[in-house]
Length: 117
Image (cartoon, rainbow, N blue to C red; front, side, top):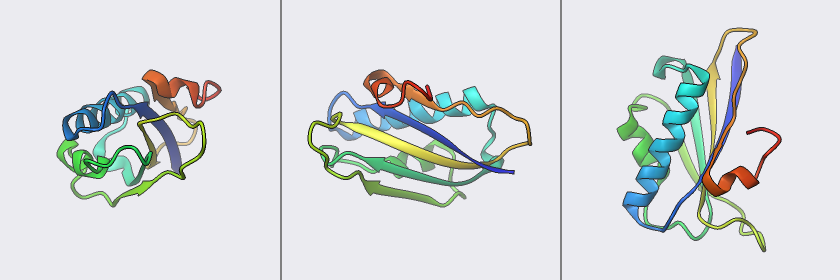
């Protein structure tokens, strides 16, 4: 059964190292919480706020091991008073029916979806 798993993390600053660290931390937490293996992943969609311009999260997802998975990065809509420096992800994964999905929101991104985190 194909399911979507959501997540987000705030990034300390707009540098490639900070974006890499946040991307890997978010993916590792989602994989751990949902007991995922790379073989279960169908596709991964990333968005990032307009103030993160130095690197693509998808690049670091490939380094994380998602080399054969379709990856996409896009810019979040620039909404007034939105949380700055945030990477969001939607992972499409094959899971067993009845497996609970755990969405993961880390750092300041916890404010985005307290109902899911």
